[in-house]
Amino acid sequence: MPLLQVIKHIFFDLDKTLWDFETNSRNALEELYYHHQLPQYGVNDFNLFFKLYTQINDQCWDLYRKNIINKEYLRHQRFFLTLKKFGIENRQLAKAIGKDYVALSPTKTALVSGAKELLEHLKGRYHLHIITNGFEEIQYLKLKNTGIDHYFKEVITSERAGRRKPDPAIFQFAMKKTGAIPENSLMIGDDLEIDIQGARSNGWQTIWYNPHQKADPEGGMSVQQLQQLISMI
Image 1 (tube, helix red, strand yellow):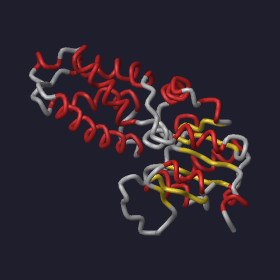
Image 2 (spheres, one colour):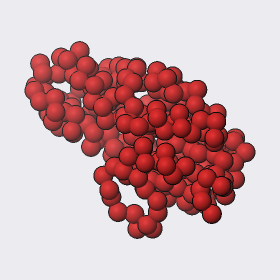
Image 3 (cartoon, rainbow, N blue to C red):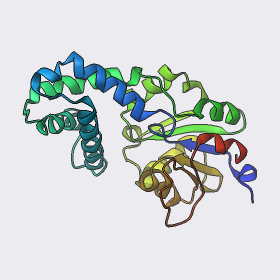
């Protein structure tokens, strides 16, 4: 049966699916790079700093999802480890950058190409929701500052649910809060393991936002651009 005939609830991931994480994070970090005068500490290449931070941030988030580290530790540890790559072991500086990054990054408003057009197309046709592992207070600010908060009926965060994607419990929590059932739920996200396989484990339909054309062992539906979804749902 075509998706249009069965889907009532569409759940979106936020970071890297709607909110342009790379652009916004890069812009925020570049401001902080100069604000905290990192070249004076010997960090002379912002592009290298950003590349290393991105890798370390992903590793720290993986530990956070597995409950190995907590939220507060993640916020500064990712910067401590990045600075350490440049020979700087300054916990106070890492904490200062971490605090400022959490305040600054959600003020950045770049959206993934096609996000606004897609949401306009879907509004009124489906119940739209967010399901995200991001920090609760930060995700709400991102939605508000980008002007897309009004599209969503429910914003399900991992902090609110007490579980993090891909844990099946967060998807079950989302269904309880929204009144959705597996048969009428669709997940759209950029991470195959966290968003797509997590939703599949609860019997949801999925569409993987896959701009880099990575392989899906299960051969599920995917798109390279969000605009492609307009003709599908």
